[in-house]
Length: 116
Image (cartoon, rainbow, N blue to C red; front, top):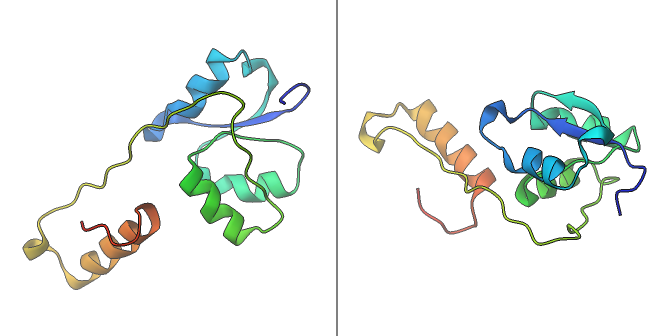
């Protein structure tokens, strides 16, 4: 599936190490053509190149909504991703702007109906 494909690697400095682990475990590091610091860079790079990347499915789904030319493919082997958690101060100590931002982030990363 990945023979001859170039990869974009996202820096794992943000704590998302699973994509890097996949590249290492499956001997794909020599095929890394580009490393970026943030996931937000990926859609523009991917839509204008023939490169591929590993990233959490929920992130890929958001990107495909923004960039309809992108597509998601299942991995050819079983895989798991690292759980993502949101940490915040208690509700009573948040400003209205912080409450709004927390709801925005929460809505982007969790299943509908899940409480903070």
